[in-house]
Length: 210
Image 1 (cartoon, one colour):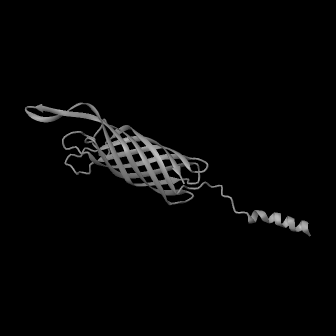
Image 2: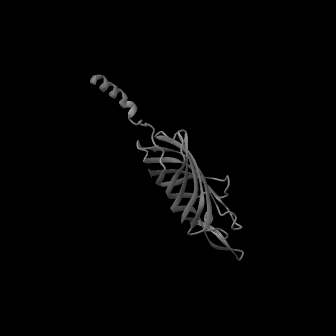
Image 3: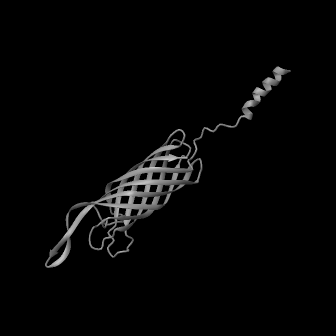
């Protein structure tokens, strides 16, 4: 019965073929570039106001835990560009005593490294993926920030909290990210003068994944 055998073989093909997954894969590693700009100041932890910050960063991320509902990533950021816009101070004298008096504004260049970062990404199989994240690191500036005055430091610590949304390509190998970041900068009391700075920032980035 050749026809019967042929029909039986055709009916068995779907079970012999490997299953096709329609779910998008969570990337195991990621390289990206991003930029952020401050849109306001706060004084939750820091004491200074009237400052602005612009950052340009490079990111490496690695998947730690993958799941259908959420995935956890480790990431590290290198910041080759950080620009601080702040009041400028010059030497002045009052009653014969040398002081620092505010005179105009200045832009201070800095670099940074955030080696400690964690990101929790939700809906890991979809193209739209909201996330929350946090990172910590250090920054070094050409002049003291956030106050360029006696006791100010060129070395500071940085800590942030983030929330945003990523949109992935159909292959999950490319993504665009936008979000909000609360950034705190402090010298950690390595100097007697620790003014601190808190800024609200908006950021956007592009990533390549595998």
